[in-house]
Length: 70
Image 1: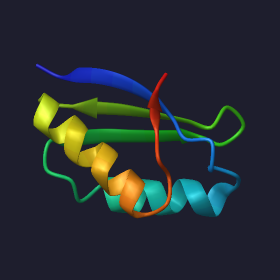
Image 2: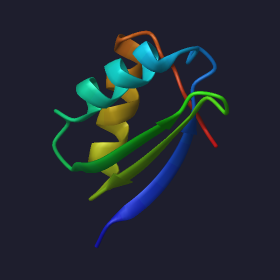
Image 3: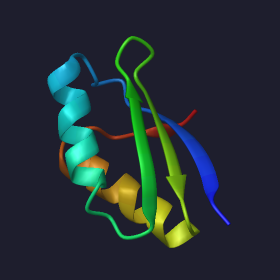
Image 4: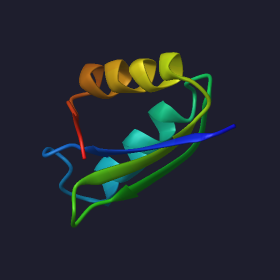
């Protein structure tokens, strides 16, 4: 069963940011869908378990997009 999370990353500013986020999170095991909305600075994730969500947050921080839960 998939879970959903909406994350906010204040450092999202352009489509390049969105592409980078999608590429990096696409390699995280357990993440099945990533949608980035640049104007609202949000990332919608579909994931399988809490471990995948925590890994996604770690990856985002590592690439310069620290997030808060939206």
